[in-house]
Image 1 (cartoon, rainbow, N blue to C red):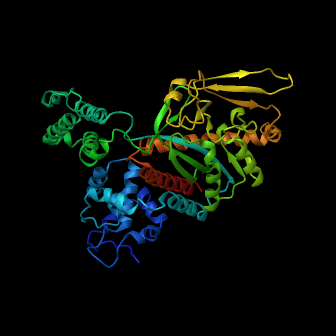
Image 2: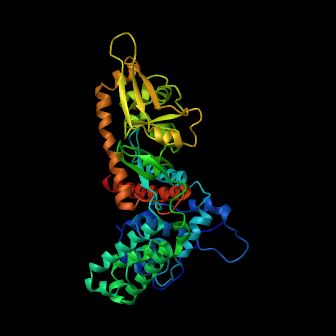
Image 3: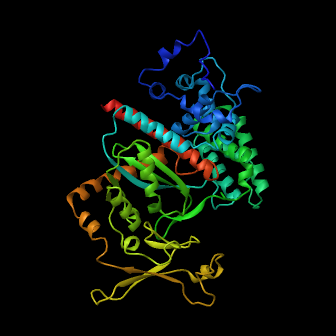
Length: 484
């Protein structure tokens, strides 16, 4: 069994009591969380009796946690650990102890964490702590999804380098505009290798000026560009993340990347999460979110969400489990049984249907009249040019057809119980809690860099989700403990 490495004995350890105050966030996290659970998760990927001893996995995990909390690169989190005593204290290091090589963090992620179920593990650990501290009182979960852009998106590799080199130049100009004359001439020939060479020269010129390159904002931009050029050149050659998918945000906009489907208590503690590619439908994740929340120890009496979660399957599930579903009906996803239900999914953001190939309808029209003895239908029209070229058109689009449509029946008397329930005062009051998860999504993106994936692939996105959610949950627990 792996054992946690003890802090190196040092005559300087008492400095921590002087320099790192009792109310320091990192000190509080160390006191709140017993990180030994990391050993139990990683025991199978370490050899304990052969070869050179590995760096303590708890220390490596804490490095990644610091990187997430402060939203910095591998290089910058290690660099700050050289001089920031709160970092060293959190990492269990002696004040004079040397830091790791930043490349060790990449290896730790790829070799040690890639096969672990870290997302559920870390969420369950934080929920366990929250329950132990008796700060979760509610019996409701709020559900929603948040979008994350792929790091390697639909831009070409050269366009990505252009963007990051531009950010670096702007950070330098904010310090000294005269540096412009020292920079190498820009490359506009469209050749990736030449753009890489330009970036390397740009970095070299800036590093020659020790004063400018020491500015924190400039240093961070240098490190980010260096990671792209040096560490991720293999991924840049892919031109885009092969796992990421295009997903609609509204009827007119889309994104390329991933979705994280989240369940959260009214106290704003995340209790479950599922990471999917960007085109997946929100409503289909609800049952997993509820069951995972229960498994984490949460009592669920209410589910609060937007119209995406009000599909018939979810209404029946909630009823069977004796849970109140606080989700307004959306006629296009709830009215009766639909033909080809497995081939067409409703996107609540765009209010359009999406086919199995990921193509969204371009317009819709209502047909029939109300109260004339038969149901009205709503017909969705797809881009015929895309249908003609679709690789999975067989059985969906017939060659020579001039239109491709999908129709649903609007049954006005369906879901009478849910319709009646959503008019109740209880429903209306509980629905007001939904704003909390939108604020949580904003926190994930704007404070912890969750708006853009930190690496490519679904596995990398799940790891980023695990670390980010763990960080925001622990911070929220500390806040609630302070308020008690």
